[in-house]
Length: 80
Image (tube, rainbow, N blue to C red; front, side):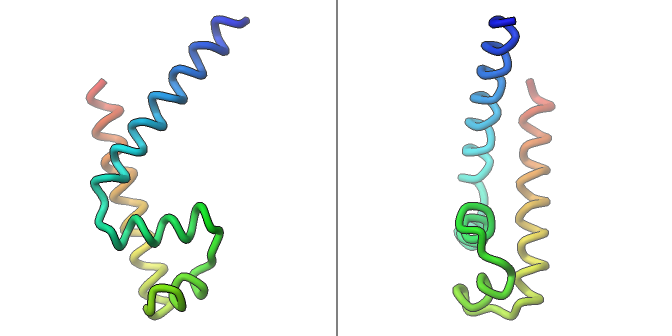
């Protein structure tokens, strides 16, 4: 049982490194938007106020940033 947990921990750590690498590729705007959304738990209205954008723009931009991050992760995971 301990081997499975160790393997899972290693895989999780590898994925976190990959995620950090993919995040570094994103534009500063995407990094900031995702930071506000994910880590600071801001909603779209709060992000719009913080960044000076329309709320509708934030929703679209967030989706594009997340999609870009997913695409980059798929490339990296598929490259293993």
